[in-house]
Amino acid sequence: MISLPQVFATPRRKEAGVPDTKNLLLRLDPELAAQLQAIAAVEERPMSEVVREAIRALVEARRNDEEFQRRLRGTARQHARVLRALRAGDDG
Image 1 (tube, helix red, strand yellow):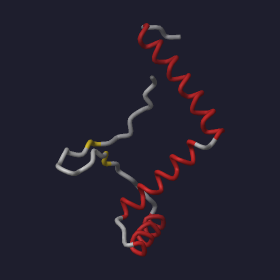
Image 2 (tube, rainbow, N blue to C red):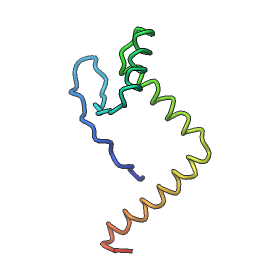
Image 3 (cartoon, rainbow, N blue to C red):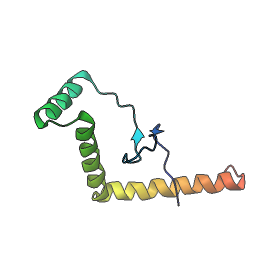
Image 4 (cartoon, rainbow, N blue to C red):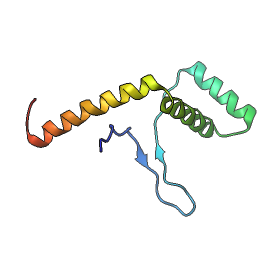
C-alpha cells in the first residue's frame, strides 16, 4: 500500500469524548476569510465546521471524478516505483 505524503499536522490529545483529529494551519486571503466568517455567522456554526464540510464535499467530488482517479492511479504507480528503488538502494 502506498502512503501519500502526510499533511503537516499535529495529532490532538486524546480526551474523553473528543474524536482523534489533526490540527491544520490554513491560510486564506482576507476576502475569502471574510466570506467564510459570514457563512459561519449566518448558519450559527463554527468556522472550522464549515471548512470541514467544504473539504468533505471536495473529497467526495474527487472520488467521483474519473479524470482525478486516473491521475491518482498514475501518481500511485510513480510513488510505488520510487519506493521500490529506495528499498533496493537503486537510483533508477
